[in-house]
Image (cartoon, rainbow, N blue to C red):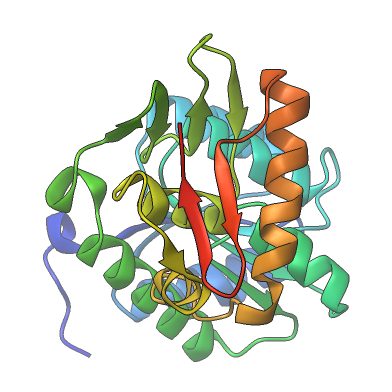
Length: 238
């Protein structure tokens, strides 16, 4: 394929402890496919790299030697607004749900063809670029004293207590807080999530709301101001 100038290449950090897979397959193949790729063998190497360099996306192995990939994902979501593609040998639905609810942009199970990984990265980065909060909407939404940080994935209560959100939770709240006081149907809310998370199952919307209510009550010591409206959907209320 035609080589892109280095300044136009998307910067990818591959975090994988399998040296052969990382340095002989993933890094060179993704580089050949037009990405600017660096490798790291542990979560610690990843954190050190991110302290000195910026990247557009991280390919994150779940089974790292020094830290569980799900925990590393949580740390990334708290400190950076970058795309994260989980790459793991765990194929169970529970792990997939945990990863996507934890904020991963995509979840791929090993073995995966490098072409599929490259296509996933391009899709995730394209989707993020098209819906970038910095380009399309304010970085923070405010409704009835609550703040929603779109770039930091945090909800802040009127008392300034904060909780960290999953990607699905962020999209759900953003849809409500853009129209405070208005009832929004479950179908429209589900579609607002699926538009950015194609893997999201609309039938899991109630589970997302349930977990979000519990998270906010525990972290903010007050109920989430989301009202359930029978046969309709939900509304952000005072």
